[in-house]
Structures are given as C-alpha cells and as structure tokens.
Image (cartoon, rainbow, N blue to C red; front, side, top):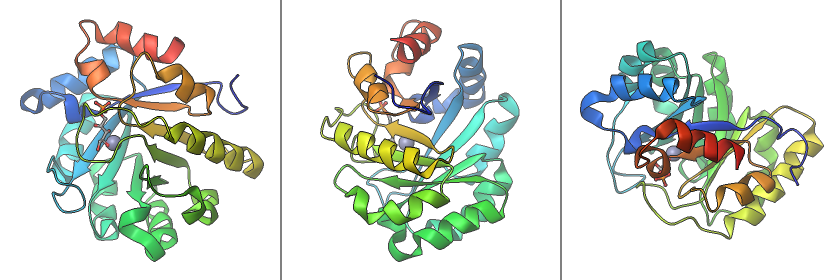
Length: 223
Ligand code: DX5
Ligand code: ZN
C-alpha cells in the first residue's frame, strides 16, 4: 500500500544509458515518451570509477526538452561546481553525503541559494541516521539501490527498508519532499520500490534497452 505523499509517480530516465552521440535527440525523445525528469548522471572518475559528462552537457541538453533536469553529482567536492550546474540549467541538484560529510548542510543551502531544488544522496551502505538531520532541508532525497558508477547493475533489495524508513521521516516532517530511488530498477522490482514509498523512479537500462520506451515508462509508472 502506498504511504501518503506518494500518489504521483515521476519517471526519471537516466541518460547514462543514452547514446551520447545524439543526446539532444535522446532527451527530446524521452519527453515524447512521457518521461517526467531527465536524470543526469555526472561522474568524475574519482568519487566513482567512471567518467561521464559535466556542466556543458546540462547546458546543451536544456533546450531539447521541457522536462525537469535532475542533476546527480557523483563527484568529489561538489560544492565547488554547484553554481555552474545551476547556471547551466539544472532544476534539481543532488549531492552525495559520502562526498560532502560535514559540509552536506551548507552544500544543500548553497544549491538553494542559486534557485535550484536541492537533495542529498546516500549509497546503499550508508545508514539513514547519518543524514536524518539534513532531510528537512531537502526538496528531494535520492536513495541509491546500486553502488554508483555504472548503469545496468543489479538492484540491492536491502535498500527497500531504507526507502520505507526515509518515507516515514518525510511524512513526519509534513514537507513535500520527493523520494527518488536510483539503480537497477526494472519491471520486477519497481512495484516494491513504490510501495516502500518512492515517488521518483530512476531507470537507465530498463528504459533505453526497451523496444518501446513509452511503454516501458508507462509500465514503470503504473505497474
Ligand atoms: C549509477 C547511476 C544510475 C544508473 C541507473 O551510478 O547513478 O542513475 O545510471 O542505471 P540503471 O537503471 O541501468 O541501473
Ligand atoms: Zn543517478
């Protein structure tokens, strides 16, 4: 059963799984296929063992869709780049607790100071207790259901408990904070993720490997 504040489900395809050589087209196609967010996985090869794209990618794709640009910073010292990602057109900027640690609260405030919605991200092995006191500052909380760095990994089922735990915290705060889950989500595990309380679903390979992306997005939203 869905807990409160999770009526509307948003689907956020990750462009990590898109064809980088035609990213504008891919983003425009996602809008036509009914996506709600574009999930932009920024990786620096230091915080995670992979490198993707950066500020200019956000700037270049922004004119290709009216969707929410959801920038997930998997980088070290993210506070140094918040202004540039904000000015490039990000609507949401999420930063990892594991990269910010004691600078998390001030980094969330910094994101907001540039007019963006802010969010924290926790890895599968980070306890909710480490970030509980910062959740109130967030517009979105992103729970990783894989260890960050690559698309196409297997979903970590233990994360379901954390999703429910954070959903309870958000509901008690009585603030409209989105709960996003990211990594390994497919047609088999999506229902459990939503029932645990997630209302933003990131999907890279499930959407981009589908024969029909619009159907895949609908299936993730409604099944
Ligand atoms: C992993 C990224 C995820 C990933 C999702 O570090 O943060 O957004 O791209 O891809 P799938 O849905 O294929 O696991
Ligand atoms: Zn991501």
